[in-house]
Amino acid sequence: MTYLILIFFLLLLMLVAAIYAIVQKDLLYAVIATGVISLVLTVLFYLLQAPDVALTEAAIGVALTTIIFIITIRNTVRHEDDYNKKDDIKSAVE
Amino acid sequence: MKKFIVIITLAVLGFYLGETFYELGFGNARFEHGVKDTYLEKTVSELHVANTVTSIIVNFRGFDTLGEVTVLFLAATALGGILYKKKHHAGDRSVLFPASRIVMSGSKLLFPAVILLGVYIFVHGHLSPGGGFQGGTIVATGFLLMLLAYDDFTVSHHVLSYVESFAGIFFVLFGLAGFCNGGTFLENFMPVGTMNDLFSGGIIPIVYILVGFKVAAELTGLIYTVLHEKD
Amino acid sequence: MDEKIFEIMQFGVYTASILLILIGLYAALTKKSLIKIVIGLSIVDAGIHLLLIAIGYINLGTAPIFSPGYEDAAAKMVDPVPQALVLTAIVIGFAVTAVALSLVIRLYRHHHTLEIDEIKNLKW
Image 1 (tube, rainbow over the protein chains, first blue to last red):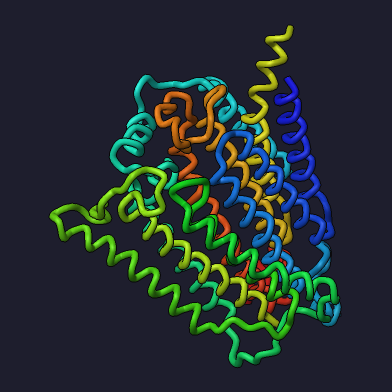
Image 2: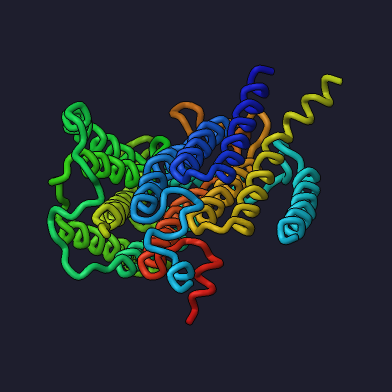
């Protein structure tokens, strides 16, 4: 019985993190929520009796995917609503 | 308007997916004697290997592993080709300021332990949970730790590309050597030892060690290319 | 009443993975910023991997690894074939995400914006 309650709680945490990742406008917080999804997925793979897959998902989903996203954010915009870093072409024409 | 159409489409898709999977049921054995029973029996009796997932990846479905290693190589090459820079300076990094003293000394202590753990995992891939892909990604994470802590830590790009190329070439050569005894490509031609020994399972440990080296070198090169990207 | 609760909770894994796929697809179809679209594709990958492993689970089964002395426990093991497929799929999913993000960096350098409406309009 406690086994099922644990699985249920982990699935709820995963869904809350997924909804937070697509609603949040600050992109850094969204990327960290994606890392939380991968972390919960690692625990779920272990509970479903698949240890090889859990090892691979722990190393790739949590560490490497997050660092690649963060370097992309560093070289582009930080907020979802940032248009561009130079002046708008339309406002320069008018 | 567009959001409404998207929500309706996704609801229909979700309904049909849900109906299919609820009919299958969760956690009940569906076949009397399927593919998995054959693989589980052959792993103990013919191959003398303890980890079934390893024997499926390297021996029974070894050609798919060759294709996957090729796709990984293509992705790393494409990434290096897209982020093309004219000159490659040694100190060109995407970081603004160096890491603190705790991170620097802690990562110097942790780096050999992580590399050792990764090599242990991919050498013992056929005896316990582990293997080439798992150990390779752990070694790449160790290199990432050192690259983030020190800004003058370099990994020579030539050494990485040589290690990766030779590991790939030897994998294909081992496959072609299966033709020697009149067998098929990637056949298990070496003697199978006793179970739970380090040298058991024919060519399975050797092929998995090569795959581990290749994945580690590739992912380290990928991270290195991305970290040296500056405006 | 108790069996009903157990039935509902046992199918929770299927429901959660299908909901993850739908949430990721919604983000990939509706959002305007390119990085949000790539995040959505990564969430779809996670949902698909969970669905594949959940198909192969057998009640009260154990991991498909033989221990010394228990070599005839093959009747109580979970299905090892979906695990081998998902192992490959995780690594390839990461490689595709890395290539997509390098394309995003290149597009930003050229157009100086990341909204897909603006990039369509700057065709000429």
